[in-house]
Amino acid sequence: MNVVIQCASSKRSKAGHMRRGDGTPVKFVADPAHAPRASDLVYARPDDLGDDGRTWRAALLEYNRSPGSNPLKLLPAFELYEIPAYGRLAARFGIDKLFILSAGWGLIPSAFLTPAYDITFSQSAEEFKRRRKWNAYQDFSLFPADSDEALVFLGGKDYLPLFTTLTHGAKCRRVAFYNSMNRPEAPGCTLQRYV
Image (cartoon, rainbow, N blue to C red; front, top):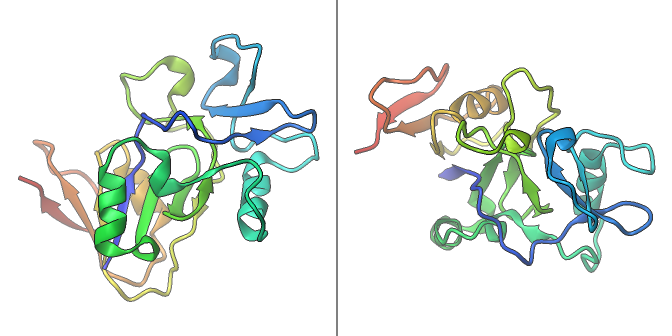
């Protein structure tokens, strides 16, 4: 069985950053124009262009594909979030069976080296952090589509549409747990009420 859990807003303070050519750290948010002013970093969206003409998303994918010493000190996705559930899921199911559904990056393996970011679907988040349905993102979908093991989603209703979209081509059985009063829409998924 493979498990997908949605991202969390609380990130570890030691999380690394992607960097511009001049060494300035980049913090990824949904709306850089409305982010608070900062003298020690710059804000960007994952699909904005970096100094080298590639999107930050493309640069991050290349960083993960290149063997090396991780000079930017990026954390594996399951270690990025402060909530202990991520580590417990990795220990229980295995790092290779755990995936993170990130509002900033898409569907990524738990070992995927991930920079600090503040992007969420939560309606209660500050404006500059909120990803809107109409925002264009080139989300990663890094779950192996040919896997025949069941894929279980643990997350809120705001993340369920992204899960169904990014796993649409998967051949395996997809199960989504929900705890809302109303049964959500999840085309192609088996819905299971979480009590």
